Length: 115
Image (cartoon, rainbow, N blue to C red; front, side, top):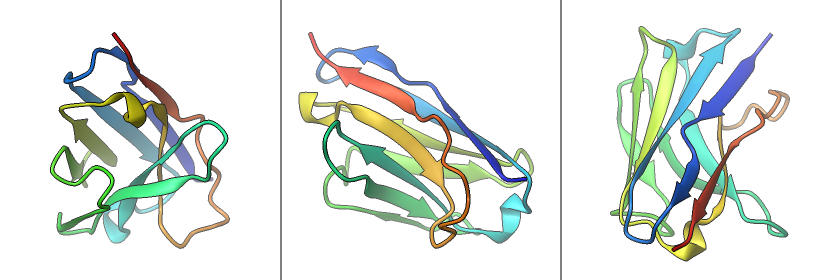
């Protein structure tokens, strides 16, 4: 059974940084691209970045240049380093396997950027 558990969110001041973690189980992590998404209250979930099995990354324009996605196939984990955070980055952040709509979504991790 696929499980995705996000952690590392919290309250941070504008300009601050956070590193989000995604712990996975229930599938062969090293075989699949992983992605981070976020959902602002009242809006649709949006893709932020994805990373392929070899570590190649793609970033959406919304946070490009301020986030770095990474993974460790031995640990079955992925991370999202977020820097220079802005108030509009306040959202719940999720990790997921792209194109696997049947995978359950984790609870996400809340990121709040506020002074």
